Amino acid sequence: MITAVAIDDEPLALDVIKAFCERASVVTLVRTFTDTKEALKYLQRNPVDLLFLDIRMPAMSGIEFYKQLPTDTMAIFTTAYSEYAVEGFNLNAIDYLLKPFEYERFKKAVDKANEYHAALNVRDSVSQQYLYIRADYSIMKIAFTDIQYIEGLDNYLKIHLLDQKPIVARMSMKAMAEKLPENEFVRVHRSYIIPFSKVTAVRNKIIHLGDIQIPIGSNYVDVVSDLFNG
Image 1 (cartoon, rainbow, N blue to C red):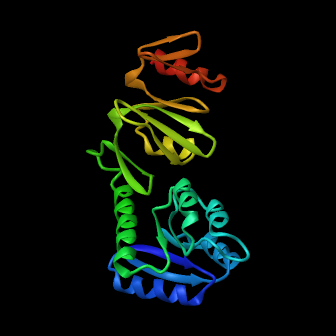
Image 2 (image 1 turned 90 degrees about the vertical axis):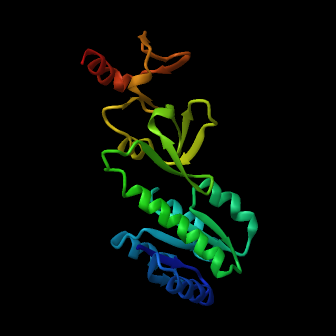
Image 3 (image 1 turned 120 degrees about the vertical axis):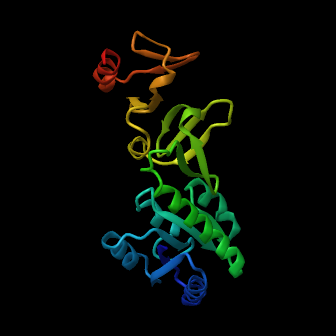
């Protein structure tokens, strides 16, 4: 069961979400808010798994609100304005509900959140060989062996894969490093994480992954040196 908070400046919209949560079997709505400041204070003390977040609100937009929260907080955006769908996509929201929405569409979004939440709880399994990432309004399952390297781009990451299109996700390098097996991946630059098994050569502060060249950051020279000496 995942816990949730709903934030919307329209009380009737909150009533709909509350009723739908009561029908769904996978989510518990613990609080609702019409004021973003009050909601932010609550969440700083009482983090939850999921937010139902309206985008157009008077004091602070849902987009601005979400950017103040940890990047691993799940969000389902709700709005009557379809032009905000792209912004929700850019923030790696779990889903985007266009008002007015029916229960079946709501349930589909909640099930996606529950699936992602369940995937995170499997990460400590000995047999776990996959990385689960939110991207493109979906939960992406990536085999560790398919990762060529990971590139940091401001508040985003680009996961370069073998024979597949790269996946872009909103996540910090630090958060990504915590998801990867320490004995298989190493950060060699503020903007690059590589799989140790794919290194073919190291020359003049450049790591070669076959034809791919990755620079070694000045702060990571000792880390790389220790790794190869070991």
